[in-house]
Image (cartoon, rainbow, N blue to C red; front, top):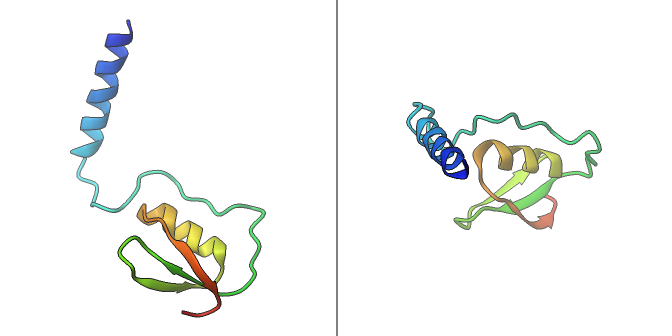
Length: 79
């Protein structure tokens, strides 16, 4: 029984992989948190070492979700 579910799971993943969705774009909905604190600009860095300024932390979180990229806070304010 578990073997059957495993096979369906793998087939589902394979079908999602060949669905033609552009690379880097996620299918799930990315919704900002309702308790977002808009504290001002924030400077973040991605896994490649590129810095970027976001309007506030919630915008960084939203971009992270949409692009599938983790952003780490470098400092408050503009980069």
